[in-house]
Length: 183
Image (cartoon, rainbow, N blue to C red; front, side, top):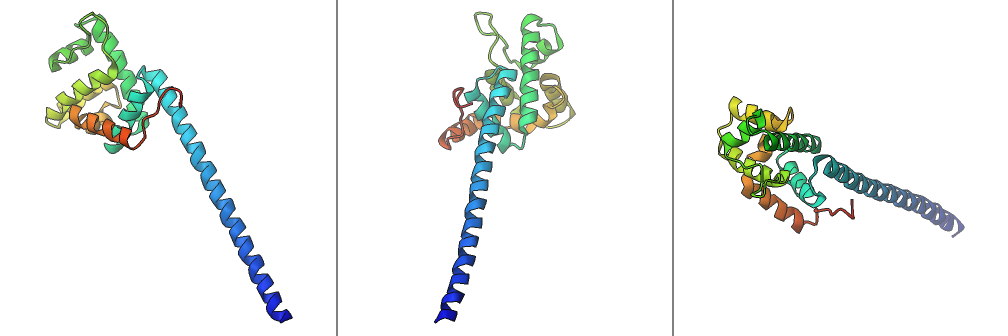
């Protein structure tokens, strides 16, 4: 019975060591997940500041971009370039950006003369791009409005307004929309 008890003690010790290792691994995974969530929220806050788009709207766009295989980096850079193009077109309708928006039939100003928000203009642009034939002209137009990362934005733009709004609704249903306080 002492031999059996000794064997049982060794088995229990090995089991406890395995359980302790599993708990430590789980704690490490949880800590990594929490850090990843915090880093993601921080990234969203910084992107919101650099693009001028509210965090809530930007988190919806980020989800749509992920569905279209557009990186967060490309989205952030492109939205920054779009904001610059909006300002340029709003102050000089004969500028390259002004002519591009006019040719597409996309208004850059509200009726009171203020600039429209980038997210709203993006939806109008997406409707236009979704109907354009893929090719060099479409790519050149995307680059003119969104900068070098504009070509990467085409899959997102091809979703059209309805696709962007559908992705935004889905992001809300899944609880993926962050607010300013969270970020």
